[in-house]
Amino acid sequence: MKQLIILQSLLLITSSMTGQSDLRIGDWKAHLPYKKVIDVTQSETKVYYATAEALMSYDKEDESIELISKVEGLSETGVQKILYDQANDQLIVAYTNSVIDIITEEGIFSFSDIKDKPEIQGDKQIYDLYTNDGQFLYLATGFGLVQFDLEKLEFGFTLNISKRVQAVDGHEDKLIIALIDSVFTLDLATTNAPGFFNEWQKAEL
Image 1 (cartoon, one colour):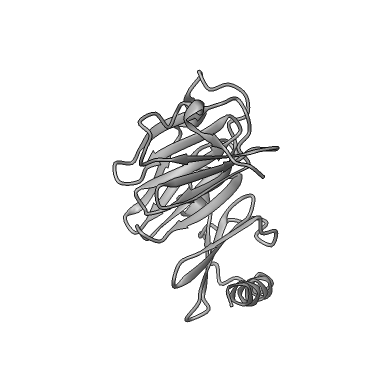
Image 2 (image 1 turned 90 degrees about the horizontal axis):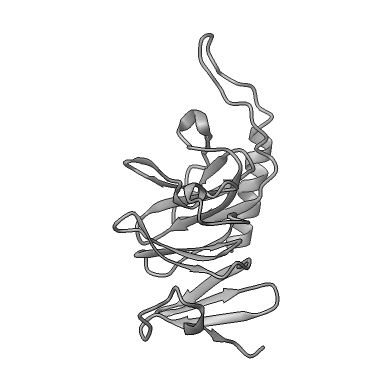
């Protein structure tokens, strides 16, 4: 059912892009490549699509489409990943330069800590996003794993292993990270040092 909703909305979006504009003289409009979708996420009412330059949302009920770019308030271009945080009713956007936006009804909040920290060397890109209960967001990056507190809106622990984390997932107090050739797990309920790699257990594949 999820795949059907996404396919139907993609077809509607593609057809709507060819329609005529009602832009008035003196108004501004962003002309961006919206047809190449690189990531998809959804809330109960909308499906969100990421292109390299901007975002689109498709309303499941009235089938309306909203385009969101820097003109509408995004802090960057070069979208890498998106994730809808169901618990807090907000959209999380990660860019190729490691900046993240959190889009809420109150506005768009931008965080550039990963990008701006000189002590983090090498690949800073964000390759995956995960939130289990709406309290913490986990970012799989080119150098390790980063925790972000969604309630305090600040960064938590950093697991810097100088290796690319391909994906992050979990269940309840368990975290799972996938590297190129291995998988590691962590029980957050039993550790006081999630930023130390020796606390993580290598999974038998």
